[in-house]
Length: 206
Image (tube, rainbow, N blue to C red; front, side, top):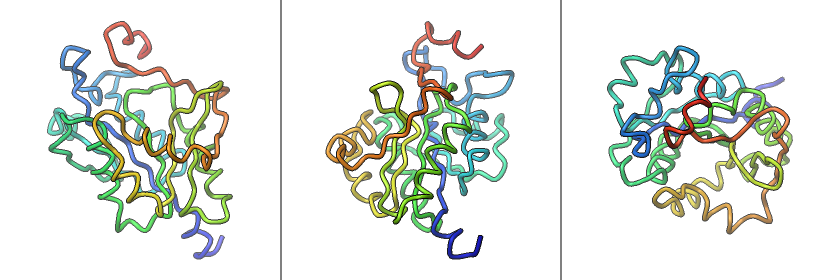
C-alpha cells in the first residue's frame, strides 16, 4: 500500500471514558475492573487492535487515578474538565484533540460497553476505508434494527458533529438529522452493546 492510500484510509480511534458513574455510586467507569484490569484498557485495546491510529482517550472523573493505574501505551490522553456536563463535552474535546492528527475519519466508542471489541471496530473501520471519500463517511454499527457503537465520522463532518453535541446526547442529534446518509454495518454476530450504567449491570463485567 502506497503512502497516498495509507493517508486516505487513516481512521483515528476516539474513546469516551470520562464518566463518573453517578448511577454506580460514583465509581468512575474507566476504572471498573474487567478481567483483572481497568475497563479503559479493554476499550483502548479494541480500538488499537481494530486498526485505529492514533487512539485518543478522553478522561474526566478520576483522571489522575486512570493515568496512574491504567496501561494505555501509544494512546493520547485528553482531559475534559467539563465532563460533569455530559458526554457531549467529551465528544467535543476528543474531536478538538484530533484536529491536527491527520486522520480522514474517527471511530468513536464508549468505555462502558465491554461487549464491543476489535472485530466490531475493524468491521466499521473497513467500511470507511472502502468509501470513495472517507472524509465524508458516516457509518454506525447495527444490532438488529437499532444503531449503536462503534460510530464513525469522516473528518469533514467533525465541526457539525461537535456543534450539535450537547449534554448526554452526544452525537444523537446529528445522527438523527443525517440518518439518510448513514451506512449501517451489522455487528450483531460479533459484539453486544450492553452498557454498564447501574449496579445491576456489573455482572456483564464477569
